[in-house]
Image 1 (spheres, rainbow, N blue to C red):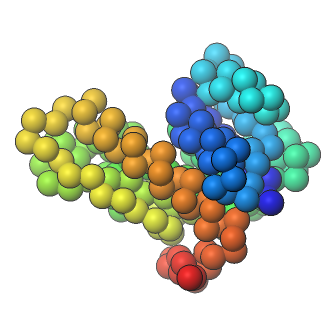
Image 2: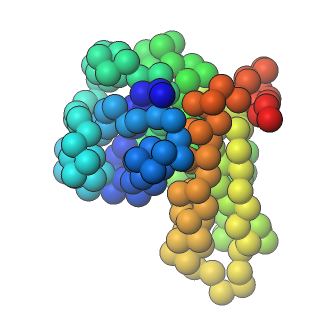
Length: 192
């Protein structure tokens, strides 16, 4: 069983999906600590309801210290709205993943769903990737597609993408916990 540290900035719906997958035994892991860069977010309450330790930190040095304190082996960014810096990357490169609401490398950064609609794509989706120094530029682990409907709004597309996020993130964590992900350059190989 591995210890997971989850970094959030908001409501924590992906955090909830991760917690439930751990509690159900779908993943051989436990959420050891939830850290937010904002004090008044619902994701912290989700963690407290499950008796998971929480912290509100903005300094990367302090974040690394807190993750080390809980012997975190995998860091999951779940709606964490800060670019990760050198301190976290040095300690957790290849052990830090992020989820993004588009099929990267298309539409990185904020409002991936709106970018997809504005561009007129017919298919969008979700990507889980390893974190590197860029904004949503790390090696892609898994992706899931979501069709873009003619009458979609940012809200309706976001809701369908979020359903896939809640499935794909736990699936990725499970593969990591099982030692089935191998990073070779920019390519992530998934073993059977």
